[in-house]
Image 1 (tube, rainbow, N blue to C red):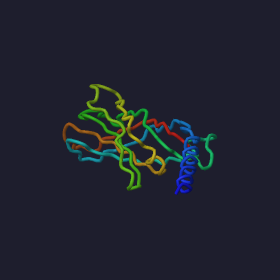
Image 2: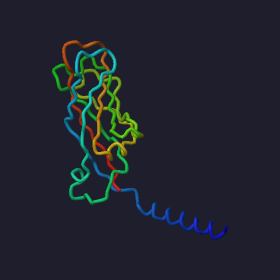
Image 3: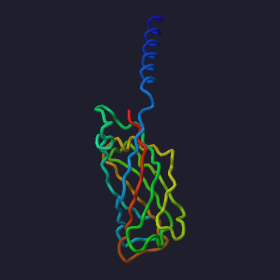
Image 4: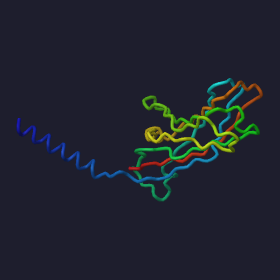
Length: 174
């Protein structure tokens, strides 16, 4: 029995030492600019969603810093800004929410930023980032869906509403 416990203790200490030596990882900034969303009309009062797809290529994102075997261990949104991409600006828009998702059904969609209410007369909306939103598993998938929810104050029957999104992520690479 003592030999068995001793072996387990040695294995546990070895695993702990390897895990503690791996360090916190390298932090890299990853930005996406002018990601376009078109909310297809007719639109009704309340939340209306648009979706865009991005591909996260770690080798491309890291450039010369890329080494085979590295992976995204964590990702956090640090900033997100919505800009109107039509002549209506933010007319009749109450709020925005930005979420991230992947094809992996075991990883939940994460709401990562919100702006509610929008500032009157603003040319762009700087969203409040949810620092607790863990996006690492989503980003690691490579194909990422970015969802923009716009909360309309009233129905809009005259076509589509178009927006652009700029955002920056902090990627932890191990």
